[in-house]
Length: 162
Image (tube, rainbow, N blue to C red; front, side):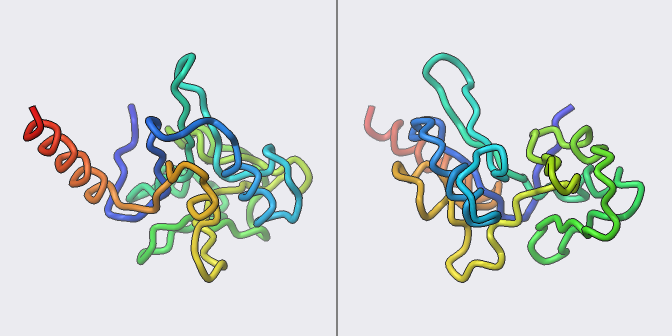
């Protein structure tokens, strides 16, 4: 069962624009760790089929399952932004959050053994670096409603052109 997303903004990818360059992964890892290492990224590039690529990051689910299953209360969700925060003093790397995430958007840092989740670069003045640096503008920080509205507009435009 796929978790429904919510009113919160999250980073989404337009697979029609994504070329699978992984620049989002590299810029994420560099922003968060100071090294270019895709394994340390909080966004993942995924091949859907032979020619279709997309990127996956935390969907900031309402009543996030990863927060709910955390037995040590190491994960919390900001009620305003939906961003999931990891308390390093409480996280024991049990990976229950990974099991609970239907989107595969959580990883365990192999060095610290702590959960790592996209925080939309909340500490960066200009927001998510992956969105800024995407060479094809495939990434966007948006809400599910905004995405739906954009899809409806695109469909209406295509219908009008027929």
